[in-house]
Every structure is written in C-alpha cells, then in structure tokens.
Length: 236
Image (cartoon, rainbow, N blue to C red; front, side):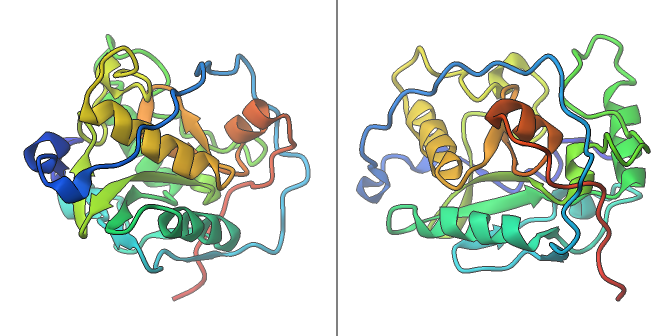
C-alpha cells in the first residue's frame, strides 16, 4: 500500500528561506480555528457549476495520490469551475515569485474509501483527518463535491512543505501549529491561510493544506447553505 506522504514533492521551506527574495511582510495572526459540531445537509445543490481541469497561471498541479500509486486515484485534477476561479484568484494575489501547488482536489468516492480504510486502519488516529466515504448525496465527503482543494505555496515554481508534509496526521499539521513560535513556517502558513480566506475558502483546522468552498463544513463555518453535492467529471 502506498504511504500517505509519498511522493511528497515539496521542499522544506527552511532549506531555501535564506534567499532574500523569500522575505515576506509579517502576516496577521490566525483566528481561533474551531471545528463545527454539526454540518448542514445539502438540500439545494448548485446544478450548473461543472468540474473543470485545474490549470491557471501561478498553479502547479502535483497529483500526489496518482503519482504515489493509490489504486483508485485519477490521473487528472478537477475542481468546480467557480472554485478554480477562486483558487486562481488566490494565486494571482500572492507576492511576486509566489504561487500555489495542488496536492489533490476532486476525489472519487472509491478513492475516498481507499484512503479512509488505510488511515483508520490505525485505531489510534483521531477522527477528522480523512472523511467517511458517505454515499448519501445530502452528506457527501468534501473532496467528492469538487469544492475542496489540498494546496501549499510555491516559490519560483518550487512546492514548499510549510513545516510538515501533505497528509501528516499529527498535531503539527494543524493550521495554527506554529502560532506561538516566531519562525518562517508560521509566516508562510499565515500567508497561505489569509490568501485563501480572501477568496472565500475555509480551512480544516487539523490540516494546514486543506481548504473548502461551498461544502457542508464551509457552510457551517460561514453561516451559508451548502452549495455542492457529489460531482463527476465530464465524459472523456
């Protein structure tokens, strides 16, 4: 079975942070990140917001699960058209030289089940890192909706691990894990958070790379109704 962190395809930001070009203005602290107790169900899903291939200036698509050899991974990366527009806006809003890389986006239900079974084969893993592969269209896992993207920063096209890797299922994966420590990782996680929030995304508190728009979690955090039910790519 593939490992969750293979291939990571990122460079530790500490390795290149000595470059003066990497200097960024101090970022505002993160707000309190509290996971909602309940999520609203999808009652009136948006009908005319198809999945489209993830491609835009400033975006590097990594496709981690496909490259790592997960059985049900797909070889293309998809998002809802409106969500891709927001992601492209986030990349465009970064300082010169900076961009975004995409680890994963839309995820088919069979891959969600494969990842869930692999992750929670460890009974000690706390809930929340991998969503239940729910088949009910009113309660879809967030990646199945096409409204969720796993993302990090890039510098000069080099993907960065912001103090930890993708699918690092530890307390260090929390978006606010470095808030009490003055370090490059804190500033970069803040930069990623505020860049994505400016485009309307909500972060998953326990995963610094995981951002949602139009999902049930996004709805619970923002006070809106969920926009997206399950999605499928267009016929090839």
